[in-house]
Length: 339
Image 1 (spheres, rainbow, N blue to C red):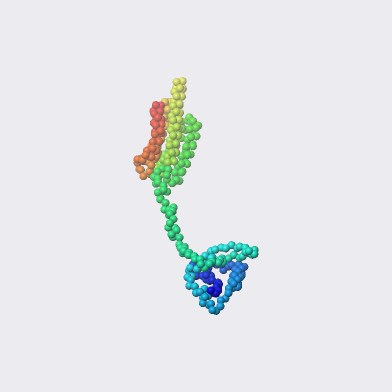
Image 2: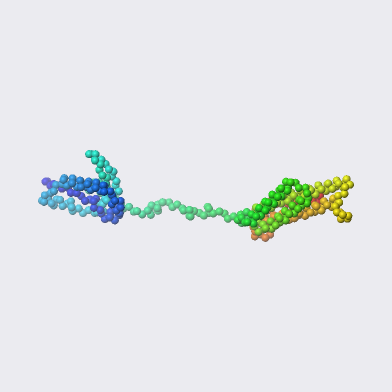
């Protein structure tokens, strides 16, 4: 037709649109590019512009109406805005056919016929978290799984008291001394009687102190002391019986064994009976203290004034004294037989 085509440089993709100005925040690092990169980019743009200008052929004035179509485009800036997408594209440096290294940059050529429809991205993450399963926090866990059962206020579960510790130490010291006396196998009646009497006096005081706290450790030590007193009392009875046998043998040989002067003298039988009465008195005292210790162990709580408890635990603790009761009754029966 004789009409020549005129090529002009398109402005598509070079002018930022309204959406790009609103969404895209200029990066501070873009303004801080090195002068070398800026120089290479500007040189490449000038080269491309020069190459384009040499290929263009300016039309005659007669065909001006055929060229005006390139400048009368009515394009929506939002549909041709590629500045945000071009900024995110990284093009590595490549080598041209002549072996020269081209400078990297986000410059690409797109045909005007291609259309890109990018959906709007909502930066909010509320919908994402709404779809995730809710994980219960430690505070939302059921409290029943971690709650410990309420323990009753009973012996051995109270905070340690200084008086209880002092009682334990003193009981241990007495137990150590009595065990040494038992190991030496004492034969002197007066020494055995003095040891038993002194021990019962001290034990009576300790039991009186424990009536307010009723510490289970002290009660167990009281039981140990009662077994030691039982052994020493039996040793005292054996000593009196042995002394009576020796006095009986002496009387058969004609040797007088009376004590005192004149009518106030005591023979061997009266002397043996007197000693047995003395040791039997201490055994009865020990039996009374044992009843008080049983009341402490079977009470369970300090609120019971009578020293009794209806709980099974208090009943079981009271039953542990049955062996001591039997042994003390047997010892009293031995005294009655010897007298």
